Length: 322
Image 1: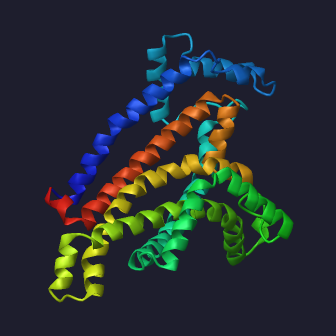
Image 2 (image 1 turned 90 degrees about the vertical axis):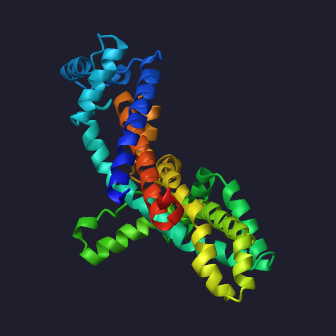
Image 3 (image 1 turned 60 degrees about the horizontal axis):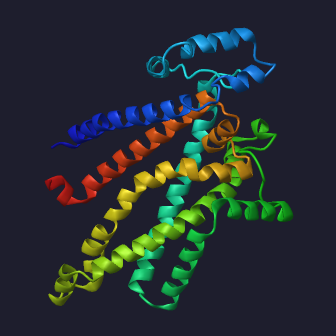
């Protein structure tokens, strides 16, 4: 099976999953006693024409099943509806999507770049002081809630003034040179990235350590070393390749988890991302925005799983053989 056929097959398999997620989410929201346009009706800045147009667009006078098909047809066309403030949902999503992607890629890059080597060093120095320190660090990192850690970092930024405490850019961003703009964005990204990376780093390094220890204890590694092959060569060419495969599987879930996991962190740092936008939409009962966020979250989960499956197929000959 060629790689392109495999990718096409995985994409086609993911379509029913997305449809099922949207179907369940839509019915749970519609069957609740909350009026889908309740917040919009209470907002004096939203005109009656906008409310009437939204009522007609959603087909609220029709059965729930018909409403779902109407919503799905509009969503495929790119018409995601109107927020409770009268703005287009598609416009709000476009404003935040790139910011969330930037933060997510940044967190995953640094987490893997730092976490995998730390896990490898800990496994190769089993029960050493470094290994015990890593165990302590990972346990603390997995126990600290992201919201609490984000608040601590926010207080640190306010007390020291070393980092900005909100937004993605400074007020004079558009008057800066290209180099200054890049530096300004990285400066604003540091604290949210540090919070999310620290919490993810504990899990990745711990998982890498456990995988490598298990692989080093396997019979084929012991046999290769007993045959006279250098320990370093066996670890690099055989043990590491097998130990990293479970982490590749985790990549898909980690990519999707950043949207939900980053929501509270984005809210604390007032970072203009999708997580914060969807969290605010839930608190305001903004149905159209919540549905768009659920679809995007599902799409990120499916996309992450497809990417991890493709990487696993490339790195693991056993998957290609199957």
